[in-house]
Length: 226
Image (cartoon, rainbow, N blue to C red):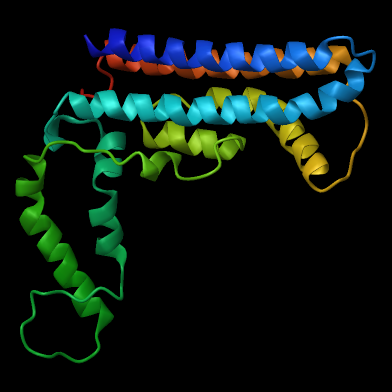
C-alpha cells in the first residue's frame, strides 16, 4: 500500500532532519551562557529545517500519486489542472501560433486563440486516457517558507490549505529574523520562551503536512469523486 510506504518515507525524512537539527542545537547550547544570542542564529537552521522538509514532503506525495498510474479522467480537479498545466499555459499564450493553419494569415491573435482552443477540445478525449504525470517542479519550484507559497502548493495538490493561516505570524517572524541576520541587521536576542514557541509551531506545521499527505494517499483523495 502506497500510503504506508509514503508515511515511512515522511517519518524517516523527519527523523533524519530532527536528529541533525538536535545535534547542532546541543552543540551550540553546550557550555554556552548566552543562549538568547545562540537562539538568534539557530533560527536560520530551524528555517532550513522546515523549508527542506516541506519541499521533500510534497515531492513524496507527488511521487506516490504518479506511481498509482491513474488515467487523467480519474484524477480530482486540482490534480487534473496541475497535470495539464503545460497545455493550459500554451492555450492562453497569445504568442503561440496554431499549426492548424497551413497558409499564412494576417496577425490575428484572436483567430489563433480560437484555433488553440479548438485543438485542445479536439485532443481532450485523447488526453483523458493519458496517465497522470505530475511534475514536482510545478509545485516545489519556489520558496516554501512563505505562508502563501505553502498554501499555493497545498492548493495545487488538492490538499486542505486554510489551516496554514494560523501559522502566518510564526513563519513571517522566522523569515524576518533570518533576513535581519542575512543583511547584518543583528536585531534583538531571542529569549528561550520565544524560541521554544517558534520551534514548537514549526514542528506542528511539519506534522500537519505529514498527516495531510498520509490521509490523502490512504483515502485516495486524489481520485475524482464527482
